[in-house]
Figure (cartoon, rainbow, N blue to C red):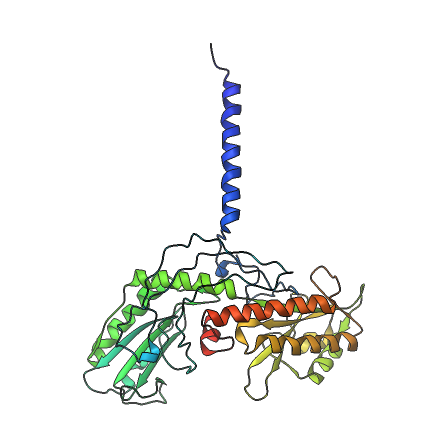
Length: 393
């Protein structure tokens, strides 16, 4: 009997459809997120060069593979407090991590990929998050032969540190620190909000170090570039899970507007300062650290000129959780400031769907802020620490 081609086609199409459904379900269960935070795959990632899409709740972390890191620096190459982890990059975990929703007050349980020496001392080399190469000259050297390397531009932040004797505090190298230096550390940041350091970035950095070492008669042990690139990708994935910003929107009802001059007056009276970046900042007086910002609900940045000539339907209070110490306390402060400004401007505190936020909703958001802060601490990225400021900068 001859088989009907149409029948065969329908059977094949049916099989493909079933396989497609199975594959999609599997991907959803595994929590696959194909995009990194550098290309906009994470809903809560900060985009410093663009107007943020702000939500009143903590953005849910993505489920990602969570590898463990290894430092390629020899165990005795830095102080005992400066050593990286000893375990190799692990294969993807088979466990599945829960994705919290806006109503949950927890975040996925995270591994501890970084060592506890989360550099309270901001100038120590940090092999867990940097590609670090130690240079040991035959004799202590001045900074001058290193200036060309120090001033070389790189795609990722690069630091050159030195110390005059082993065990002494590290110092940043520049024209103002003449030396001499018995030990030098060249450090390239492996990941930040712009994404992971690429293989090309790492190759260029290691080539620069290799060219610099003979100028100061120094020995240097270079790590394997491919391994460093893998560490960079893994670090970027972990940071994406912890990259959370929280926004509270103050919106005029219906078609109401706030004039720029009134907004500026109210903001400055509340302690905010207008910055060239196009938003207001609330700065901690003692430390100079930015606690939270005030941004236009529209994409337009605030400038002295725009505030003089235009108006806006609302503003957004924005808290960058990894970049502040004690995020829960800072959220409380921001929440009170937002409520005061809501009253002053005769506006409403709302979410992205323009639904008013009550105290219960705000308490839920605070719980998630605390959960994110706890996850950062457990991963040895203390909120507001030098390490956190580098990774989330």
